[in-house]
Length: 150
Image (cartoon, rainbow, N blue to C red; front, side, top):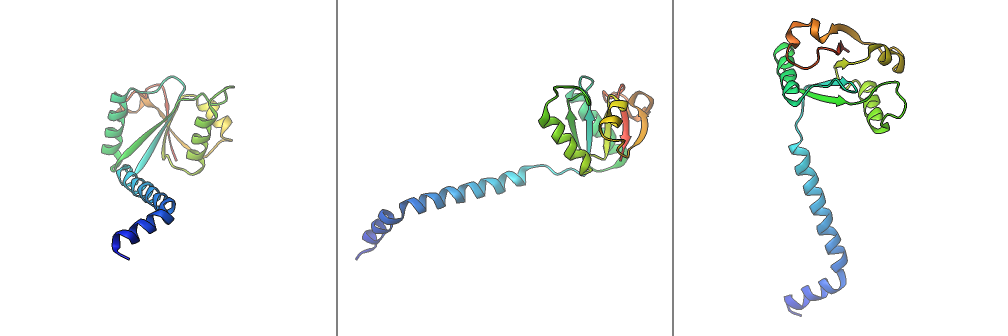
């Protein structure tokens, strides 16, 4: 049997496993490439507010201010929810719960401090003050939010 005939026989009997193997290989390669492109941050900042969240320009200023103050790179995660309210998005609440329980975000900006304390069973945080009272947070869009650290 010549080589061409052998390849035709292999293809005839094994074309489905070969196609599945190629697709699986493609998915694995795409996943690995996608993971390399995901940026890694040293710290995370969580903003928990229904309506008082900063614009993209203010978020960039916030990252810059934190980078100058603490060093490293910062990611800002905005949780657009009102704690304790009825009918809030369960997915957003679950993400916030995971963030708080796993201590992902070291720095928090909280709109309603009393509601936050009540819904998190007085989770241990250090209140630094409101954004407007902290001079280095000027032009970051967090003036009406409470700044807390973990």
